[in-house]
Length: 449
Image 1: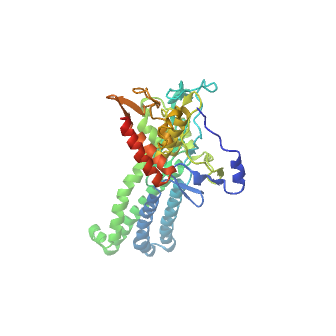
Image 2 (image 1 turned 90 degrees about the vertical axis):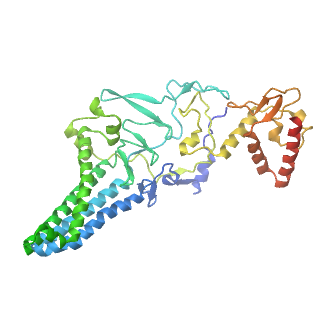
Image 3 (image 1 turned 30 degrees about the horizontal axis):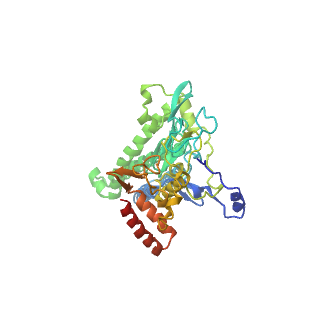
């Protein structure tokens, strides 16, 4: 069986003329969205980012117009301006942290072009059609982390063994290092390279909610003191404050609770994914370094460099074709086409038909003595029609199913072969010739039956 063909040597020459190279982000196989020529990378649900910004900016704008502007008149000059300045600064920092968490590489692990060789693999092993290769990639491996054995899994899509704490995001279709979760509000995976910005965004949002909530009550209190009114009467005079109090009260339970939860995760050096999946409180956490060192690891270490260069130029890939495995092992997907796993899609009929055609050309039986008797039959069927005195025996055997079978002393054609062969034959000939061949073939087929 022929192995995977490497890229042609003339591909580099074609690339040097300007039409053989493309940017990495244009050949990206994940589900990400890119902005400004690949300088910013977002998740496929990036539209939710605009909704999140609206939920931040809209209440702040209401606060500045109906509350902070009135408090500027009630307080001394510098103190009144500071109320407005602080809320604007908190809002700008909040949106900045949101964009830093959303628009950067969260720690994507680059995909492999080919599956790794299994341990103990020694050269080429011939595998006949229909036979299972003797070696397979194991689904998991054991690695030692701080003296504790940790299992790492093989990713069929990325064709690699995920590093410890790495997981594949089904939404972005990427393996992400130290995967925490995919946040729909941020529109991005949260991982090794953007976790600190995500936490700081959540924490600053909590501070912003508390700030707006507190100064709304301050404004109501100023109305009560100035007009000597009850709290209910003062609240009726500033409906905007009531709306903001309710809005921030609900929001602070969400972002405040999330802040407390992630403080716990940071103190124990866990991710959200690990907390819900592994429950380290039941056994020892191999990544826990102590509370202080855990916080220093998140906030006081440099952000690791990205492992992907989205602006780098890479050769264009040739047309996708089903790949065959030439060695003595296959990917643990149990025989799925590697090209389809790479693209994260199902095989298409054209590729499947091409694979069947290649197989028939290599393993078909030549019945040249029957060509004179069936001159008008398509060459595809001339290979599979039975010769004389062979009734009851299959002429060609596919590794998974036979195209011919015996039923009540009659030859029957498999329903999958007839439409495929007809469509292939019709694509290569004119409509008039195909019609005549179909009619002649059906007459001969009825004679055989």
